[in-house]
Each structure stands twice: as structure tokens, then as C-alpha cells.
Image (cartoon, protein in one colour):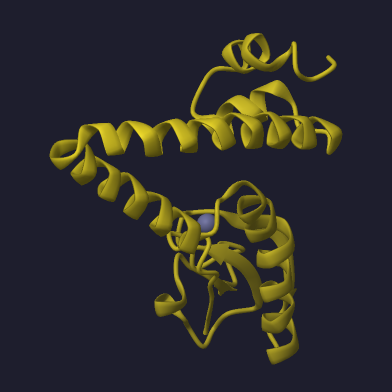
Length: 158
Ligand SMILES: [Zn+2]
């Protein structure tokens, strides 16, 4: 049994069996009857430190640990997959429009730019209110923390 979320499709959590040597087996597929416990793990290589008993309840505990320790922080920083798909579609459609009717594309892009700037400022302000660092904001936007700070410090206090 694996744990998944559509917002982080590259991560598949599972209860990794802990071998008698203390090592955790690399994947659920490597399941062995000689395991002595369970440990939450993920297909990305993340492994929880805490170990649970080699019982169905212990395996269930690892699901909660995967969610709380690994998936939840990733999901907090990951845009919903559905919105990413819509954003990609909008970009693709405007690219096509720009090729056929560039003036129409300009009108639409100007409209997008006006609400995009407002939403960006609001999201940065909200992230700062929630305790996000400039490094985290920069990482979310794919820019350096210095660039993020220089770009938004005027709109957001400190
Ligand atoms: Zn992962």
C-alpha cells in the first residue's frame, strides 16, 4: 500500500520494513518476512527516523508520519496540479493567439499582467505574514532570496 497526493505526483510514500540489521528496506517491493518494524519512506528517497512496531497498526502510523513530516510541507509549497495544467493551457492558447492575432494577444496579456502583479504582491505579503523567509519566497518563485527581497521589500514591510 502506498500513500499519494495529486499535488505532489513525484512522491509516493510507503511503510518500509525495517530489517533485523536496523536498515530499512529500500522499497515496499523489497518486503521481507524477517522485518522487525516499519518506517515511513518515500519514492524520492526521504526516510523518516522514527520506527514503529511490525504490526498493521505500526504500518498505519507510517502513513500519518509520511503525511505530516514529508507530504504536508511539500504540498504547502506546491501549486495544485489542476491549476498548473490550466496555467500551462492558458500560456499555450495565448502563444497561439499571439501568432494569429497579436493585437488581441496584447490586450489579453495586458489584462493578465494587471491581476498577476496584484496577486503576486498579495501572495508575498501573505507568505511573509505566515512566517515565510525571503529564501522560501525566492525558492517558490525560482529566484534568489536577494532578488525576492529587492523586488518586494517596498510592498511588504521587512
Ligand atoms: Zn518524497
